[in-house]
Structure formats: structure tokens, C-alpha cells
Image 1 (cartoon, helix red, strand yellow):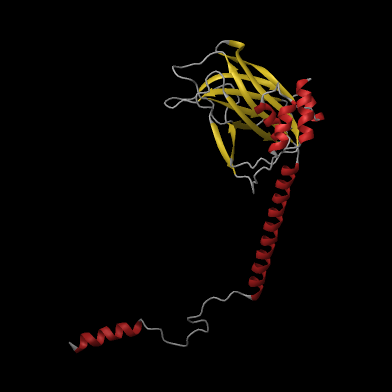
Image 2 (cartoon, rainbow, N blue to C red):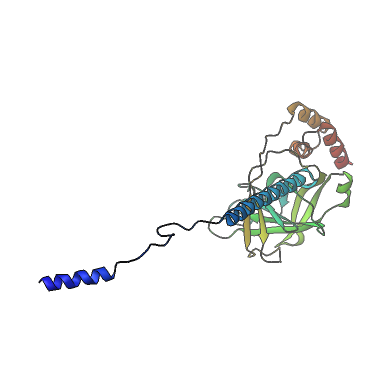
Length: 273
């Protein structure tokens, strides 16, 4: 029994380290002073680069806010037919270059839907037309394309002229036979309309008048929106000056001109002429 114990102890002693311990025994690796300095310099350079990038992006966003924009107001439409067993729920989809915008749906709008929706978009190089589609919002199937048209962007707007016009619509009834849509187009500084989250969609298929084209939504959160401050008395005075013009149209032009009374009167006079 003792020989077995002695043999086991001898085997264990062979596994024990015998001799002088090295200087770095049980010590963590220490980073050299040069490596530490280089790391701190790299972190400082990365921080400066990040701050420069953030400042550059802020300047770009500021430039976009200050730039003049193309203002498109979708007022209303007069359609020749109500498709379906009940009154249609129409909404409008606009495409300007690579940007696509939608109005709200007019529930039970039928053949005479109204939206009074203003869209502001930055001018894009080479883009000289606006594509318009009207859809009927459906609950149990895909939304149905009702009518469409293509509107050339008038050159007069870049000279300060506001254009209001009824444009013919194409559809199942044939080219230019599906009804008309009333749109106001102007160009200038964007009014402070207190916008909420907007949606811009980039089409993945090149043909616009194709209801099967898939759209990828990109949600954009505007920064620090503020409520508009329009003078109701000025609006009423302008509406009284143009008694034969639809009050909602006058209000839309008033808002598009950021509540500026003189600019609104001039715009309406141009529309009357």
C-alpha cells in the first residue's frame, strides 16, 4: 500500500514546475507606450472625422431647407364613371423624377373626389414632367388604377407665375376621356406647413402606369416641424375679393404662399386672367 502511495506522489512531483520563475509569471501583457499613443491618436482622428461628417450633413440639410421647391397642389377631380358597386375611395399618386408622393384617401369621394393636398419637392435635373395616377382604395383586393395623365412642368413657374389648370385624364374610357383633375403648380420657397412624417417611394420598375409595379417605401422624419401661423382675417378678405372663385382653392393658394396676402392676391389675379 505504501509503495503505491509513494509511486503516485512521485508522479505528481514530476508534474510540478521546478526552477526559477520567469519575470512575467502571472502578469498581464502590458501595451507599450507607443501603441497606446497611436491608439489615442487614431481615436481622436476618428472623432474629428465623425464631427466633420455630421457638420457636412447638417449643412446639406440646411441648404435643402432653404432651396426653392416645386409646389404641387392636388385640388380635386371630376371623373366620368364610378367603378364598383359602391362609391369609390380615390387617392392620387404623383411621381416627380425618382420621388413618388401620395395624397390622403377621399372616403366615398366617388366621381368628385377632393384632396387639397400640397406636395413640395426639390427640382431634379432633367425632370420636366409630373406623372399623375388616381387609384380607388380597396379593402379586399389590390387598389384599382382609375385614371392617369402626364403634366409638363410649365416654364412660367420659374418666373414666379402660379399655374392652375384642369388636366384631361386617360383611363378605361380612352385617352383623355376619363375626366379631369385640378392641379396648382408654383415654384418658390417652401411654406412652413408643419409637415409630419412623409413617405418617399422609389419604384423598382421603370413603367409608371403599371399597377403591378412594386414600391419600396423610405420613411423620412422632418426635423422640428412647426405649426403654421396664418391670419384668418387676411384669408377672409382675399376670399371676399374673389367671390366667384372656390373658397378652398383660395385657401390652398394662400397656404402655398405661406400666408402672404400680397403674393396670394397676385397669384389669384394670374389665375383669373
